[in-house]
Length: 80
Image 1 (cartoon, rainbow, N blue to C red):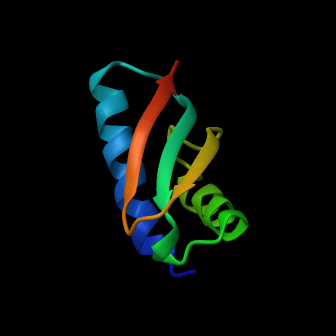
Image 2 (image 1 turned 90 degrees about the vertical axis):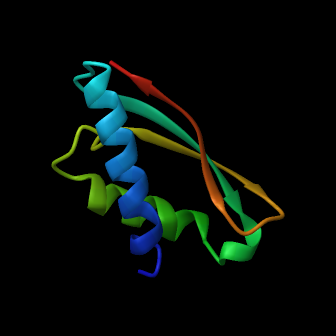
Image 3 (image 1 turned 60 degrees about the vertical axis):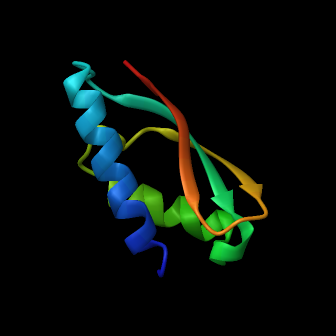
């Protein structure tokens, strides 16, 4: 699960921002993922699901868009 070190800061950052906005939960997250990161979509989503348990992101739908690059960007997220 080499994705763990990539996903943990995303969960932390989105959680902090959503809490500041007074959200109860995050329903959808859109990420742009660089193809050169070596991320496999299924593995990334599975790891995200495990790490998001117990957080306000636990039920969030994760939408990944791949591009030729070597970074991950949070495009947007929906809060409730």
